[in-house]
Image (tube, rainbow, N blue to C red; front, top):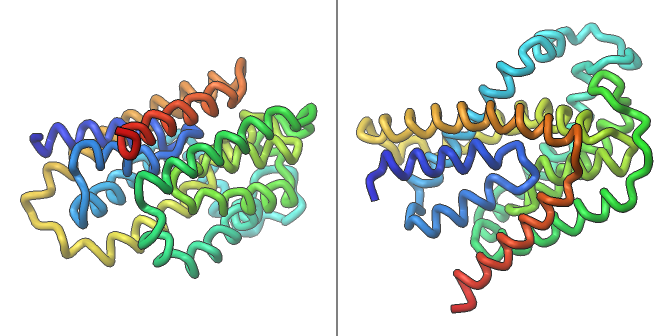
Length: 265
């Protein structure tokens, strides 16, 4: 298949799934396997186009990110501060630093993704069942305690297929946050984590690329940016009137179809 077409397909997959609770990493592993787009080049491409998705969040929430640059904010202030973001990202950064190599070596396969899809679905369904009436309805009402516990749930996303947004939004629901507030906090804390992870991976494997790959990277980047922008806007509107349940069932369906395709035929 033409590389530009592959770039568009995977760019769409990344943009659609990065901020929805269905696992972008899991979908890209599955789609890459189906397209036969695997190996070092595919790994670099998958990492690079995530930067396009990150850019969409930076632009959509540019005012909040500008405010987050002010580290003079009091820790107890009733608005989103750098301390809330730190509380949300330190747990996963610490665990991810020590487990990065084994995760890349052993968990990036269709079978482990299927496990993550199922486990994440169970968490989301349980959160919707257990969650009580939210006490925190807006992003600026999040407490440091809630930010930290959402960060703990984000550790689950290190398993491909589990979904970073799925685990963090479910964690937010369990700690009295509204779906919208949990989703927006998930988007905000995704930016530094994804940026660090992308730069770390790219520095290690950038030498695998050459100038002939630039067109493919550019197409994938732009596609992921546009689709991620649109998917975030749609998702927030969706959460105003619905729950995570439909995403959980979608994940279970994808897991079942993937198992049949890769292992059941």
